[in-house]
Image 1 (cartoon, rainbow, N blue to C red):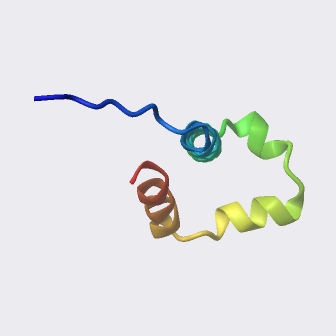
Image 2: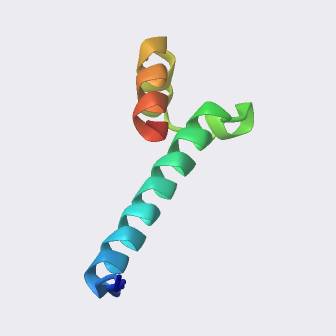
Length: 69
């Protein structure tokens, strides 16, 4: 019985690294929103504060599921 091993193509590694970076950016974004301190919240302008305060809780749940799923 002979075994043949194929080298993984370079394009696969490039795409994998790009997608890993994309996922890490999503995790960082989610964590920064989920763990926002009061000082960071106070530094936002009024429009951003309004968007965060009026966002339904299911949005953060869906965002978390999308990022970690």
